Image 1 (cartoon, helix red, strand yellow):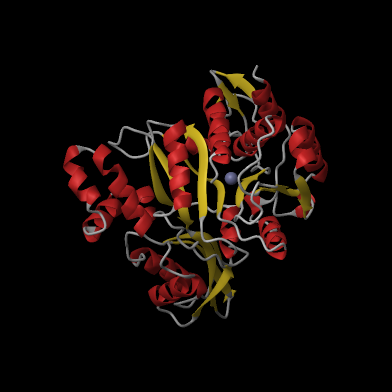
Image 2 (cartoon, protein in one colour):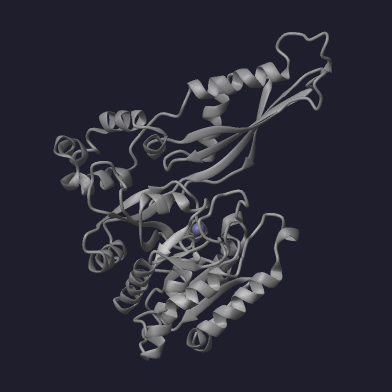
Amino acid sequence: MDADVEKLCRLVRIPTVSSTDEAEVDAEVFERFLAALAEEFPLLHERLEVTRVRDHSLLLRWAGRDPDAAPVVLMAHLDVVPVDPTAPWQHPPFGAEVHDGAVWGRGTLDDKGSLVATCVAVERLLAADAVPARDVWLSFGAREEVSGEDAAAAVGLLRERGVAPWFVLDEGGAVAHQAFPGVAPPLGVVGVSEKGTTTLELVAEGRGGHSSTPSRGGPTARIARAVVRLESRPFPARLPAPTAELFRRIAPHAPLPLRPLFAAASRLEPLVTRALLAAGPEPAALVRTTMAVTQLSGSPAHNVLASRATAAVNLRILVGDTVASATEHVRRAVADDSITVTVLEAGEPSPVSPVDDPAFELLAATIAAEFPDAVPTPYVMMAATDSRFFTAICERVYRFTPFRMTKEQRESIHSYDEHVGVADWLAGVAWYERLLRDLP
Ligand SMILES: [Zn+2]
């Protein structure tokens, strides 16, 4: 087997599962991962300045030729989500076995594939005594999957050192095959914004008491009414600029009757948003802030009236809305002063990074060079990444994972049967290598 693929396999086999409960985290496993990383990439650890962030995250600086040029930051995370033991994995999730030309295992796509590919690219350039045109920082997080503070801590360290990056690149989009019905070429989707994750709690209170003598309008009934009202008052739809740009770029590849609509998406916003809302939950999520009631609670026993009923509402806030405006929408939709609405978790959508810009152009050109069949395009990400913390120190934050992924592979992330094609992974290494060589 290819020696670099061997490295990926070794690192996938180390189950760096993170958890919001620190007591659940096996620190020894993370230490083992970092030790293996140092063994596999000796030049990178010898010639780059290595800083541990909190306990298991890494920040590395590779000094470039021009100390005055704004540096770039390449990010990835080394933690993975747990494996559901009942999920029908075809191959052991931490086995990193090679079958049908692919490495199978948790983290191969999200996000050890990226992390190891970045390290291989840097190691190859170091072996060739190449020096990047400007400083390159690598930021490898150990708590991405649990929305931990490590990335914020890394940002703090960079800020202390006065680092103002030219651009930041993290996981996110991919060379996505079967990305859009009727569009044949794969799309090289680069995330330029991500939705904000916010959770609200609705609480209704009342007298409680014995369930044999209920009165009308108790806490559970009011919470139920609020939930139904939320469902009947969704957020208004709109087309954010990056989504309109995505339609413009895929228009020439779309089915003929749709081309004029896609090409003029920004002018035909009401028509396009209506079509997307009707096309199913995924397209609908592109064009509005979504809300989902995920948890309900009432009384602790069958025969006890609830004195307190609650509903948790998980929101994914589209750029243009804010935590405050979304909370206000929920209050108005619920239209019940007896229900209190509190913010449990506040996450604003990330600002939109520029598309008409040399940094985006560089990423798009690198995509075009390594994946000539793909259409590079910006998009708004649905999921959250550690890079959102970097928007505090950089206005150009992009999210792209340079691997070809089928629809099935994208669905395997955080699920089962996650795998990366060996050739696809090596193409990803070449992509990072080219990007680093081509830094102006
Ligand atoms: Zn990830």
